[in-house]
Image 1 (cartoon, rainbow, N blue to C red):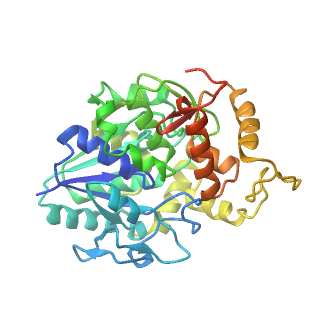
Image 2 (cartoon, one colour):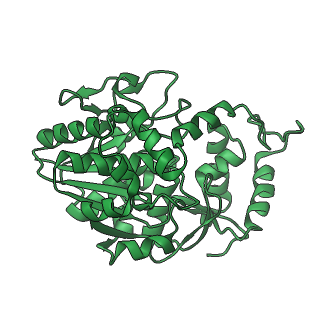
Image 3 (spheres, rainbow, N blue to C red):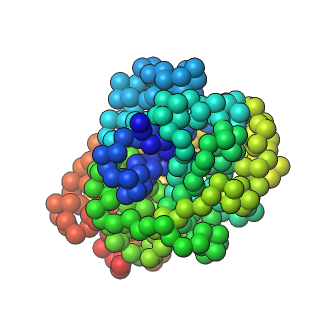
Length: 372
């Protein structure tokens, strides 16, 4: 028998789901985590989620459900970090395919339950946009989470919904979420992060990194790459909350609207009606703009073409960023705002860790002018 869990939002939610599972049941408890291959364009340049046909080397465990293993690989031009995650996380990873809407996802969940011999499902979401009411102005990616809720309801399996790190994904503010959550189920600790901390040396998930940082006791203002404003790591950051599926559906109108969806196109239209936008359409637009120039060139110079040494470039960027009151930043923010190649990022990490070891507060980086 295995525990059956669902990482509701894709991306780095599988990492946090593995950590929450370990905190709830112990790191050695066998588990399967179902997750989307739906990652940021920095990882996967193809908009929208991937499906089994977009991978080689997946393992069938049912008519529609496939496991992702370290031997799996995305078919170009698609990209995915799930195969590498499958090698670094203890739970097995199963691929959620939303292209047949909530109806298709419900079949996959039922197949996963049969494979695991599980009679219940634990859903995990980092940040809390699974509890959106669809009106929050900072909402960016509600569709995957809402589809999971709708599919779990359609499957008929008893389901518990867990929210870890309210507000850490910068979509639904913590102050809005806390009245919807009740009392915390548990508080993640430093010990709970040990099995996943090293993943953030290479994985760009920012909400997951902030959850690990909060569990490790880091407090203060943190700048991430995609958020419109910094995230403050406070005392609620390491908390995990549990709600019933019925309560989550009551809060989330998009999930209710997706109950009868039979295609991803159906789901997109429902999101446009309820929330006023389709995140996949936004991804298509961003992908079309991906050739725009940034302030830094990948070759290590400025847009004017004048090269500068990497430590000097970082120091100038750090002064500007810290001036905004930011005490910590994610690795992804450093890499993308300085347009660093993987080699340059490794070089900068080594430089910072050697010259000023106190800067690295895994999985974040402390800015020298910041406080926290």
